[in-house]
Length: 222
Ligand code: 5RP
Image 1 (spheres, protein in one colour):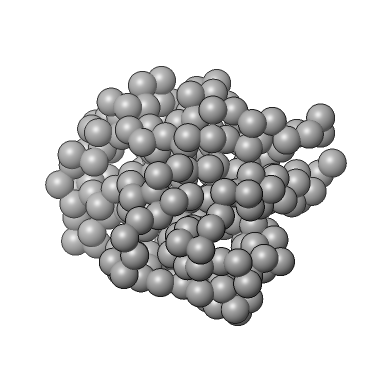
Image 2 (image 1 turned 45 degrees about the horizontal axis):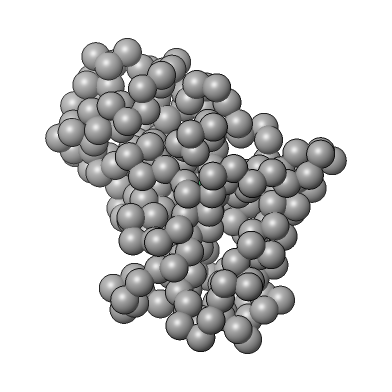
């Protein structure tokens, strides 16, 4: 199976995972990216049974609405039961790097609210130590140079993602050559830099379940 087929397999596995748990009050959080898009397309099959969703990006909200799936502002719902999203990297502790699609802040906010975070990824995303994928950091524009200097002090090589403005009006620095053996400490340290909105490490609140697609099938890690 190629990567696209593995993404399709985990999208279908996520639908199978949540379908028996959905009722009339369920609120679904929906992530961003190509794997999440495939999940949205699967979700369209049961659109009549979807009470409400909240989206982690404008692009996701548009795709959900195009399928006729109801989308609400996060502030308009009392709870988020399941959050389903992809990842750029994951480890066996279900800690993640996210933000390749620049949606990390809204993804982290929906994750913070969700009762269960179901991560869907193909096996190419599984690593022993996070950091081969450059770590995205969302930054208030006027703080770009300051934050970049602080990230260099931490040992990384930050690169400004040219031409990208997040849904929140901010910029992204991608930190290259930055191995992350201690994700919890690194997530907290980077978030403590003045001018950082958030970083793409999801370690303080990792995924609850990882549906990992491989040529042997979809494994469930929790
Ligand atoms: C977007 C993300 C995505 O989940 C991540 O980039 C994975 O994307 P894809 O499913 O396209 O590989 O964090 O900000």
